[in-house]
Length: 163
Image (cartoon, rainbow, N blue to C red; front, side, top):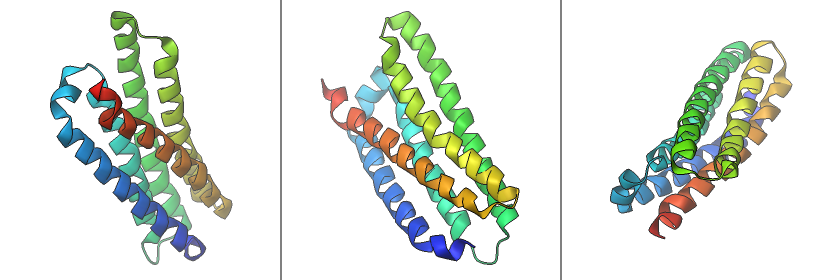
């Protein structure tokens, strides 16, 4: 079933690895400022988590001789972990907004992107585990939103933090 998706999974793994490398560089260049500002380290962790999630899903999808049900369970596990992590970062961000008086839309935009990244992975996993091969199509929005959220965070970690 996943043979038709091999090229997609390989491309997503490569893109996720490249962006994760960019974020690691951004963190190493701006480590002092990232530690200095509350919430920014969480943003870095969130961006890396989403990209590592894509790498894990691609790895599971490319593993040979794996049943669709097992693949679904693996993708669901990654999706649930990503959802839990992004929710925790959202809750922590809400506390920062209250204390530092940042605008609500600042966190809402970032959180929505992250939730829109994690939830399609959960849907894909549930559908695949239930025997619906079309669940693979839910990987597309999950990857797209993961890349958007991670690229936005990379921009903040590289450029905006210098302001």
